Amino acid sequence: MIPMKPRVLIIGPSNIGDAILACDVIAAVHRGAVDAHVTLVVGERAKALFADDPRIHTVLDADAFGSMWGRFKLALALWRYQPHVVIDLRHTLLPLLLKPLQCWRYLPQPPKALVHMRERHLWKLSRHAPQIASAAIAPHPLASSQASDGAAVWLSAKDVGHVDGLWRRWHLSERQPLVMICPGARSHIKRWSVEGFACVADRLITECGAQVVFSGEPDEEPVIESIRELMKGQAYSAVGLTTIRQVGALMRRAQLVITNDSASLHLASALRVPTVAIFGPTDAAKYGPTAPLNRTIHRRLFCAPCEQALCRFSHECMRFISAEEVFDAAVALLGHGARDGGRGTKNNPTRA
Image 1 (spheres, one colour):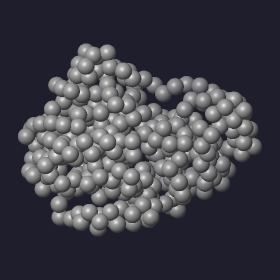
Image 2 (spheres, one colour):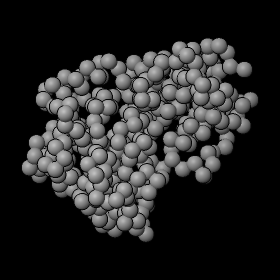
Image 3 (cartoon, helix red, strand yellow):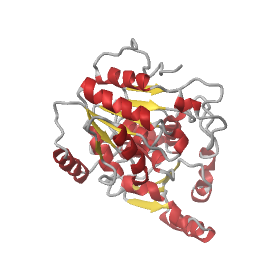
Image 4 (spheres, one colour):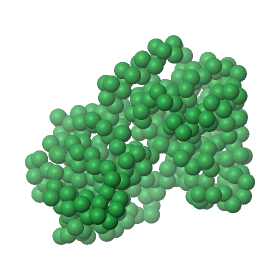
């Protein structure tokens, strides 16, 4: 039996993209155990996503305990915390220390039939905390909703207010569609071409009357500025002006997000924003978009998805994706009438 006010420990991913994929677990814990004290262990890069999140009471930076002595101190601190429930999304050894009599819950891996990381995280929740998972289906009436549309990422009033200020600063209009383009990725081989992004952005502006805002991390600013220099139309850049959650608040006001396989993709999916996702070396079945409206564009090649850090060939999986097909997918989701006859739906991603 779980106490009325249980202590719940969630061992989460280290990077921000995977942490966003784990937000459905955090939302489910909040719905299923509204009175719980929740401690979350994540990497340094993911901490900003959960700062001041009312669903989480303590956030620990796992990277701060990277040494052997540090890992011992973290294990000791968590043992003293005495969690009633441990949800391990990283398959660590900590549950064997904290819940030795329930170690059988933590040994199996998700079934191979569950491919997407979001589904695999939710499977672990059902395995590690079945009572909470069951209660999350019929949530406590006091459980707060992160968003009226069921989004799993929490956005603060400060985040929304900051985006309101940017909206006024850029003189954006509610009467024109807003398209956010996220051309970066942690690995350069997951990035589509700057020429392709520039072409698509210009066509969205001239043919669809769209307003375009680029977003990315500070080290991706040179990529975004290269795209803007190639463009004929005016586009805005949110680089350096927003945190990860403020990017989410801006996405909430967008009609479409176009992105590589990156944290931005997972953020758009978590916020249920229509998404065009461009995939190359990584597996869309594992990390693809999950928003209700989406298009996945990738090439069916003998080497893709390779999921390798370095390309053995000439990056054909990204080079062979044309601006025309990305634009067509964007137009389809914007509701201007797809020229591909409905090609590229969630269950039938765009391929060639």
